[in-house]
Length: 352
Image (cartoon, rainbow, N blue to C red; front, side):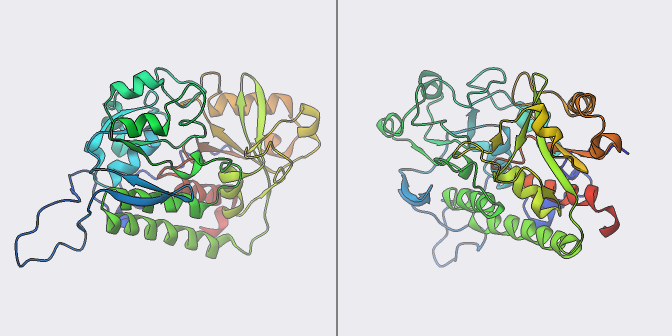
């Protein structure tokens, strides 16, 4: 039986991830709220002084002043700020809103964030002129080569206007092919440090770690089904051999047959022929939905039909064993842990 999984728990009903973490949705928890003489600052709202230096991509980055005009990479990053209570600082994002993968409780807020990059596109960066027009004091890229690359804004450009960039893990040099869950959790903690809401960030991360621990307790010792993790772009399959897509399969209790099959350095995608794919028969397909991010990417149902038409004898196709992975799950976001939970349930329903 086909499993169509949104990989985001319907938090409007249970608020699973965010409620576990004790994070309020919205409000302005200013990190520089004044404290009356003789009083202590509330534990959840530490006082932060700027300039503030944080460690980002393994090097120090100084934020010259309190961020009040923030430009984020995309919808996934915007939602991280909404969860931390600082979403009102966002003035724009690089690309159009991806409402396909948006968290339900944030869709209305997501839809109101102006885009600097226009429609879905493969280059996750606006022009230098478009980005400067937003007058940011902080930019938060999360995709590779979104800054300090050809045809993008540079760190020097931002410094010249008194702004800074904090690059999240997926956007660090050559990082996408080696990312682990811990890197993504550290992104949440980094943003908590940047905005002076470290307690909120820690509670959110603690809740996510609790979910991961529960999954491992349930599926850690079970037989691992063979898995191919891929997406379909313009009718062609591209498989994932590393990075977060591989990590998600592994932690959900599966065995990705394409792990380490020599993707390009720093990348996660293995370029293969149909014959190569056929030579690796698997029990389960994980289909990443990139239709909300890249024009030409097929939606999950169409992607499954395309793959099943090409490989009808493969057990995953013949038995209709497949699940959808959110397009946001492989980048800094709030959905990747819940993606692991839901995939584990799909592959090991007997454990839940």
